[in-house]
Image (tube, rainbow, N blue to C red):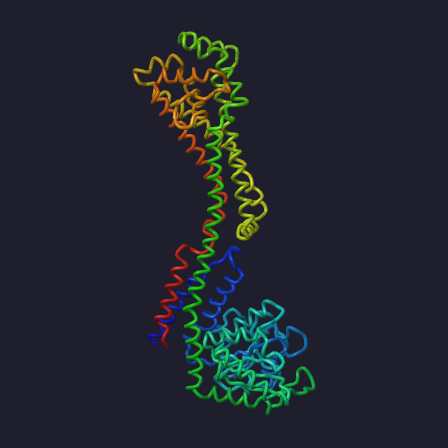
Amino acid sequence: MAGNDRLRAALESLRRHLDQDLFPLEIGDAVGDRRVLGELRGQLDDYLLPRLAAIDAPLLAVVGGSTGAGKSTLVNSLAGMIVTEPGVLRPTTLAPTLVCNPADAAWFTSTAILPGLARVTGGSACAGRGEPGTLRIAPVEAVPPGLALLDAPDIDSIVTANRELAAQLLAAADLWLFVTTAARYADEVPWSFLRLARERSTALAVILQRVPAEARDPVAADLTRLLRENGLGGTPLFAVPELELPSERARLPAHVVQPIATWLADLSVDAKARAEVVRRTLTGALDSLGTRVPDLADRVERQRAGIAELRDIAARAYDVAMSAFDEGMRDGRLLRGEVLARWQDFVGTGDLMRALESRVGWLRDRLVAAFRGRPAPDRELRVALESGVESLIRATADGAAERAVEAWLALPAGRDLLEKSGVAVSGRLGRASADLPGRAGAAVRDWQGHVLDLVRSEGADRRTLARAASFGVNSLGVLIMLAVFSTTGGITGIELGIAGGTGVLSQKLLEAVFGDQAVRTLTQEAREDLRRRVRALLDEERSRFTSLVEGLGPAPETAARLREAAKAVQERGVL
């Protein structure tokens, strides 16, 4: 008992790791991944945990098989009354019916097994198709105590939910009564389930129905051969002859099903035989976890890798945007158009040249400009430069958003995520945020203020104070800002050729005030500060994508914990 308690604790730990959305996106074979997860959850909930909790509980024999194999007719015949509805209309079994002795009804009406199915109880009054999602319990005296028969939906039903339910019920069984016919016993679908029974060491008996008298021996011999070749040699095999029944609801004659009834009755009263069935099926199910859970862990890692790929795609799109901004600082595009016009105003009015002549002249020009209501040319140049940098930021952010959305749409996982995010969200993702212009403008203005602070700090030195005062902080600050967009690897000449020959003069003025090395340092600091501010803006833009995958899917340690849980089950799984 102590060993069983430790095993149950290990299984409960494993079950907790499965109780999360491990496969939220269409990554790899997501449909198959979810099916594997559902099968594991189901077998733990429906069979392993309840069976370990009540090792001596009645056996559950699930009657399964293909469409039209006669499962319901067989169950009715063994029960001696109509408890489940056979018929030509497919699918016939919409809700499974469990037939048990009245003494065992309490066990099966509880939710100890198959807890996901609501219970409906009654005997022959339960006959009919029932409501999907329910389990009809039919107490019948003819069924021996200690054993229940469950009529499952078709394993090859045209209804997906029925096929899935059939697989769930078979996974919850102590014993499979697998029903096939003389005409269809070699079909692939039944054999896929029979091989699964072999892999999981599930206790099994095969009922071959509708066997013509002349074909009984050769068909039984061929089916026996197939069972042996598929590793199922020694499986009990019962052959039911082909009979003319008066109606679809008619039962098979008692003498026809007597061998099956006797075998089941002997099993129910033989405690040792019942224990062997439980031990075999339970051990097989536990052993299968040693491969099924690590396989699930591999699938979890694939899901995480797919989600990480979406995150990386967004990151790469905004890394490219940052590179595009860097290129925009180097290629001179900011020094054209309005910036060029304002630069020409700045130089053409003679501000710089007059500043060389005297500080008084420089102040006189500013006062005249203010009196006339006209902004100082250096201020106009700063505003033009601010507008140009803002436009470059918006353009790079728009490009990044477009690239990220297109890359996501090229992947099933990305399309799935965008679809689940809704039209309102996904529609806005393809362009920069609506509030980006405001944030970009504030960032550029803050940067310009930082550049002026750098100039003031550098000009505070006693050796440069007088020279800096001759030109003015604003004028020098504008020259440093322009240098950021016209040089790359340090000051070797402020390449403002498009603005005329004044570029060389501007460089000389900066060097005359601060010195060659100081100009390099000022320009580099100004450039890096702007890049940091732009990088922060782009990171905020990228977060619109990464927030969609944040917390999505399994936690990082899930796969490792699944493998650890499977190992713990194997170590404690000796019954």
